[in-house]
Length: 122
Image: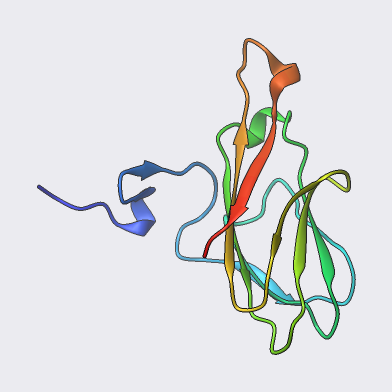
């Protein structure tokens, strides 16, 4: 049995869609960061001295069907990253030196059900 590699879109049998090939987007946050549709799936940020907001793109955009974002918080102190629905409701809060995963859900037959779900990992 062959194992998937990260760069072929399979991680432990999980199919991931979107630009995620060995690259990431990130840096030090100075305020709210809005993630564009073209962002890589791995988001690595240092909140830069305060709690910050990270806004995911619109979930009902066809480009985002099935997208997964991994949010990595590299804070050097107790600074959290609140991941939100395109500037709206909170999806999850990622604590210092933790990782969270957000996934776009919904169906093409019922676009009104599109949204983001997420959870910080222990």
